[in-house]
Image 1 (tube, one colour):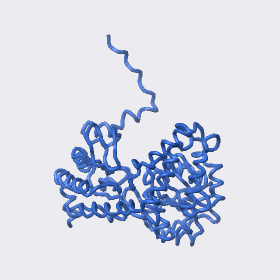
Image 2 (spheres, helix red, strand yellow):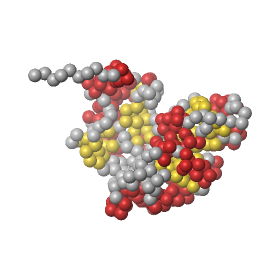
Image 3 (cartoon, one colour):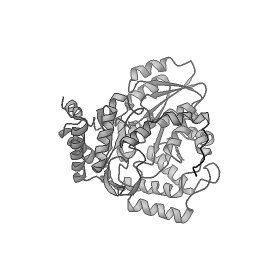
Image 4 (cartoon, helix red, strand yellow):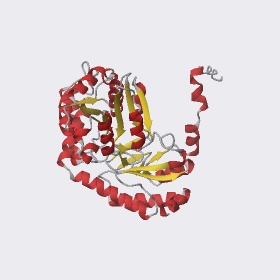
Length: 409
């Protein structure tokens, strides 16, 4: 007896039947997402029974398996349980949250800090609560999606300027309505390019136009600046950046986010950010792990040194074989292939060669600028770096030889 026919899907689901791009990629064997990791080390991951060199994580300092971090997580589980089962606003604030906030306020040299459950929610909460109806928000066109989504939730006007075009930003600031509040929001490190924002130029504009400056240091925490304190510290501009936000899911090997700045501003956000008030708080083990990771970062500065050594070595090896990894200004190394389908085939060849990298295609980048993105860690070894370079030679020669020629020219 045949199964009864399934009723037709309601019209609101029509889009789910017509967009088949992911299914086409799956059928072609070049679908790069949701690969299930079965086991991991700081620099490798086992996927479907095969160990791969991991260059897709943002585990910059290699702290995900550090004994002190793991023990701190375990101790918090034993003391507080698996979760707080409530929001920060109600029953979800632990003494650990307050300890972490005090630690991060001092770390960023700010009056106060506020811890959110994720980095994404930090951006939503900060921007949506601070940018009101009479305010204007200015975004770099390559700002991360969390900033863009925060802007969508805000009631003010959003203006986007071409990536890094501070002359265009200056013209936009000049056109702001009389009396409007103004905020510039920028990534400190742009995650698809691995480049660093022109913070001195942005500070000059914010001074000239009475704007606030918010810097998302998701990829700069632990990487740039004295003690790994990020972009503002890198440029010596701590006092000029009004708000810093960052995530703990990269260098600090956990999950969660922080906003740091003036006490009055943080007090407002604490009582108005829906992304804080209406979600469960950061779990105890994650808070404790973040605190331990901050300790390790401070006490083992050689990890940052190794991270930069590995970044320079990987960039040099890629250049030796004829590929362009970009400026290598950060541990994010983008190798541009160009054509989307060729880039997908290069990704698959690397994956089959036991190298895990990120495939970057539209809408993250333009269709003619598709790339393979590598993220280095302090725990990669020279042997792993050589192995990755050799895999790139095979993959690019087979599927995108023009990338080698373009880099050579």
